[in-house]
Length: 441
Image (cartoon, rainbow, N blue to C red; front, side, top):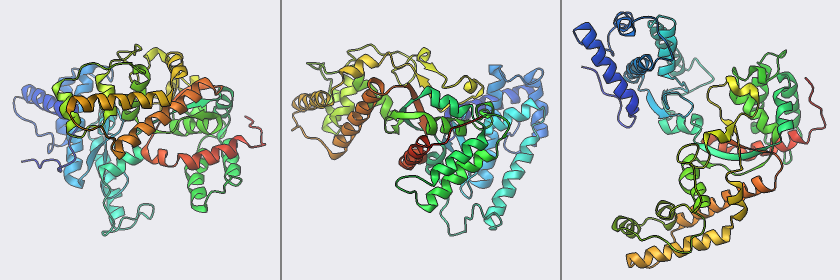
C-alpha cells in the first residue's frame, strides 16, 4: 500500500484530480489497476501510449491532463522517498512546485513529465530522480559546499521555498522606456561592467557581504551569457535577469511592494469604491463578523459596491487583458513574465480624485456605522490601523507614479525575498543610473 504524502504538504487539488482521472483511464484501458507509484516507468509508458492514440501533443487538453496526472504520481514518489513537498509558485504551469527539505532543489513535475512525453521516453523520469537522489546524498554527506546542511541544521520548509521563489508580491514601477530599451539591447558584458562599477560607488556604501551577493547574482550571471548577443536576444534563456536589468536601468518611480492578495482585495477596490456618502444595509453575517473582531476595512471593500465600474475579469480586478503589454517586443518569447507594461488610462481619473484623508474618513464613518448596527463600541485594532495606512500609502505612491512621473507604468512581480531586498536594490539602481558611462552595444 502506498504511503500518504506528509501532513501539511497537500497535493494541489487539480493535480490530485488529474492523477485519479489518469489512474482510472489506465485501469479501464489495461483491464486491471496500474500502480503509478510503483510500476516501472517503461511499463507505465506502454499503457500511456494506448491512451495517447499517437504521438504526445502538448497543445491537446486531454494530453495535458494525462501529463498532469503522471506529474502527480512522479511527485508522490519523490515525496515518499525524500519528504519533498509542494509549495505555491505562480511561475509554475501547475501553480505549485516541488521542493526538498535538505537542499534548495526545485522541480516542476509537470514540466519534467511534459519533456519526457515529448521525447517519447518516460524512463527519463528515472534519470531525473537519480540526479536528485545523488544531489541530496552529496548534501547530506557534506560533499556539496554550496549547500552545507548538517544533520543539526534546520530543514527547509514550504514557507522557506515560497518566500524565496514564489512571486507573490507586486509593485507598480514607472519605466523610462528609452533607458529600459537601451539596457535590454546592450550586450551583457557591458552591463556586467556597469553594474560592478555602480556597486563600488553606492551611497551609502553597500556592506561587503551585500556587494558580494549582488556581484554573484547579477554581475556573474550576466558574464555567463553570450557576450556577442544583446541581453534581450537572450531573454528566453535568462528572463529574470533581463527584467531585473530593465528595472535597474529604467525605473524612475513607483510604489512599494505588497502581497498580491492585498493589492487585489484591499488596495485597488478602495480606488473603485471611492467615498460614498452612505452605506448599504448590513446582513446578520456581516454584523456578526464585526462582533467577532473583523476590522472595518476588509468589511468595507466586501460590502460597499463600486462607484466606478471595474473589469469583471482581468488582472487584479482593475485591468482588462487589453491593458497589458510587453516592456520590449523581445519578451514575447518568454512564457511567464514578471515585468509587464500596464495601460494606466483606466485608473488615472480615479487616482487623480484619490484623497487619502478623505478615504481614511470614509473608513472611519463605515466603522462607526457597523459598530452601531452591532451594538458594539467603535474601535480600531493596531492591525486594522496598519492595514489602512499601508493601503493609503500604496495608493498615494501609485497616484504620484501615474500623475506626476513621466514614463510607462509597469507591474512587477517579485518574491518575498526580493521585496525585502528592494531597498538595497534601489541604492544600486541610483548609482547605476547616475553612471557617467555610456552604454554601448
